[in-house]
Image (cartoon, rainbow, N blue to C red; front, side, top):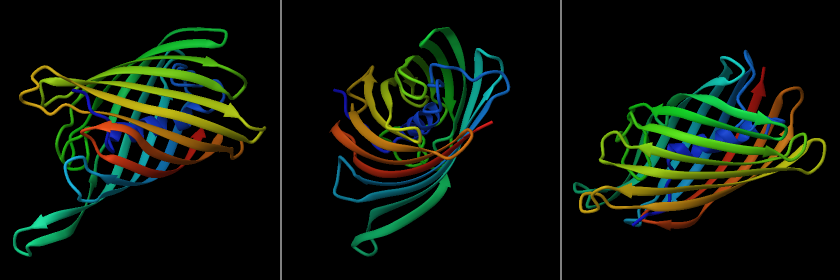
Length: 266
């Protein structure tokens, strides 16, 4: 039935989101204050072993994620990414595998987050988003150029544990636009301050396909874990060094990744 995740754009979105969330007392469940802005620039290097074959799949991605506080309770967000994908493809002409490289936009999305409540160290929010069609990687466990136009609703709840530390859970339903099925996603994040300038962040990203007609679609599920160091770069700035790996999967690629990032709050 369910199968564990590949290099889904959403995985990167989650990594980006978790990076900016480590800014003091501003996890995803906490909306930005009116006029506040956050920009997160990341570079990722990903290697995957597909579930259905031995071919190696590599992706490099540069992404910009941004949030803007429309009001104290409403935050707008968006993401734009450029991907370079390298694959081993069988050539009938050469009767051998050849390396194919493609560069394109992919994993782009936008949406709105609405704060539900914030009391002392607790907060919750609900988020509505959509992805966009492109010739790159748009959706979990699908080929390049497939998908886009997916709709997502995401519930978030978090608790501040200290000035910079927090724990948060996000549960989402994503409706795939071109298929009669959806996905359930669960992202967990915890940040622990090591000292005044360095934090450790642990995350898990899980996805399960929900098939209305299993005779038409192959189900999948996956679970990935990421560990990152977050360094204070001055007023409103953070630097990130993270590693990510698949820890369980069913019908999805086995992924490893290195992620570098910088986040700036205004």
